[in-house]
Image (cartoon, rainbow, N blue to C red; front, top):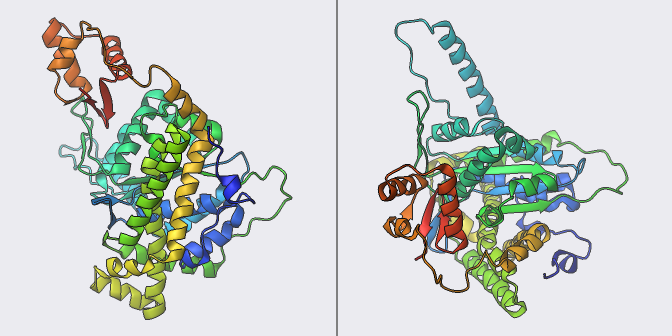
Length: 463
């Protein structure tokens, strides 16, 4: 396993973002935590910004993609992860205030509905579009809430990864993992209810960013399956090890710093459009190809695989950094109220101004972010991923030379199929409903044999 590059590249163990790449708002947040926790703070900043900038997308490799991010800030107990809460609260202040207003409206409606529950004519339940979603709920409730935001981008922040893990158990956590993967891609998410009383969920494009904080043990529980695609979509940041640090007081945000952050966050929430950034695009491709060449020289399968989504995540994060610079420029040129007016009257202005932010400092920031994401993948999961690649059951190196009684069922299935379609095909072939255990066994064996792969909530045949 290749050594983690972090110590060699940054001798003091600190990854830095160039000062020139820090716009108003981002600058105050990064200064708030200090250099030792700069990357966890940066990941929290960009993750929160992706939720605030709900109408901003980016063209990456000829595809329009959302800014959706999955972030995990990992540190031991008392490693100052609470500073990430403070950053989230300040950048997302408008969404959070709106959340509590809607919560009060929902409480009022529930009281009225309870009071009038015996009335002949019941009022329909209104929608409550909460864009800040708690993870301390059921998966079904979360899915319904995400549908209610009507295409806007939702965001969830949890100070403890253990909250969803404990709340949902293994089955719910697996569905949570699926939802996260679909949200990263902005894919369709659907959930059919069995009863008439329960709500069906049909989301054309799941727009959702999730920021989690926790200890390493919680991260490993969340990533119990390292090959299902969640790890490659998650940006992991490591909190500074403060075991032997002398005590220092945490400095809260000053009123002036809060005002600067709030100004920029408000403007970012008004921004619209698809960002097209040819210089950043070229830098991203160059970074990915350089890692591929390095991995090929070393025969490092893990490094080669990890890079494939890490460079896209770094791309999205860098675009979020650029939005701070655009907002700062608008404030300097027009004043705060003038910047509001410009954004309201000219929806295309962000896409025009952001092109100028592809500066050498910003491209350097991209490199540092991409390198760091890759380093953390290798640090926390390098050995586990290597073991997967060495597992004879993980990779099929030759064609199957035998047939089983399930081959006929496999051949009758469409190229992309669901578990329900598999159940129906078994019933058609065998004349009876298969047991849950048999269906699970068939899917497991087909995966081991390299016959199928996961495709969101579906399965795709490889042959």
